[in-house]
Image (cartoon, rainbow, N blue to C red; front, side):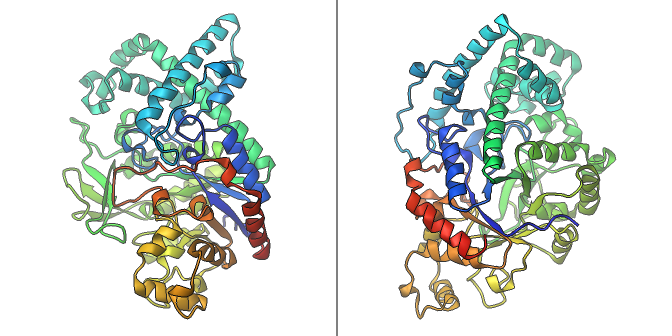
Length: 504
């Protein structure tokens, strides 16, 4: 049996949402101030989203170039200046139209300019004396880093075109063609390795600081990887692809649900589970090990796909015409457990959950997720209502896929509002003020051993601060808060009192 989590609470916040002078959150000063705030407020957990480098629309789940690499846009320029790879006076802040939104179109060229400058300085330093840290990093992570750096260099050389549109010899990974390109793109490859070295150096420093303050980090493994990623390009046999065109035969999604009447068509390629079984799930086990190098726990996104997954033919335009296919969940988690011992895993078990999915989750004692925003449609049997919770679960006011608590309340139906009011002992919804704080209190007071609150709900933010709306592909993943000054002592005291009150 895996560990039962101690009663505690945490905040959900992706690093891109930190304030900074460069248009996107990074691993610098604001990150450390946030960890101080967590500690002072009595929190013991910080939940993040996947940290990988993102492409079009910047979803860390659907559009990431690698599941092993870190996103260079999160590198702190100020930290680079401390390492004398940049001069403090040469770093000019990015002029922003809206400090509450990441404008990727402006951020990418702005940060790339400085990252390339830092790389040039790094190379100059290497000419003077070698960097054992860099060499050690490259050796330790060679299993994914070499392919990743080559993939990113090739992607840039092909103007961002998906790898299946590269010359056939490169798309099919002909060894001679790869050798020629590796030599030709030597400089671009070295630059990509430098970015990963710096990212993980900064992250490791931040994680150590966090752990010293008593804060554990909940990392995230997205169930699928992006088609235009190094993982699919370098391991095509692990995915259901056409052997000639290399196009996905089937793609991932979910059937119609709460978020969308036509389902969600994610477009990610489906795994070739037979081949994965033949390798004793080696690639998946490496994924878990890599995640646990930068996080203390792992939340598995779309856990239900380990029991059965929704498979849609590659040519479909929505997710309606799919089918459920069984996956080797028990075999996989047994193998993972043999490799890792107790599994520090949290299961995102939302959506269409069958008794078989629940059995798989409970067999390994993984905590499942309860969402308070889902609790008040329906009647007393709604499983998201707190009186149904068991101890070994994780409660949220809402996740990164939900609206903020205030945004949810503004659009909730009259019946939902009335149900909520009666459940909490109000005569009518009109009596309720500060809905976000009512939900926060409800989460913290529940039996659930873990309670996670998105920072947006703590900062009293409305619909504009929503991180992701799964029914739209455009404009998500951009929210950030303006200043660390919003994390006031008064707010910290209020949260500390609540955490104490409910033994968190």
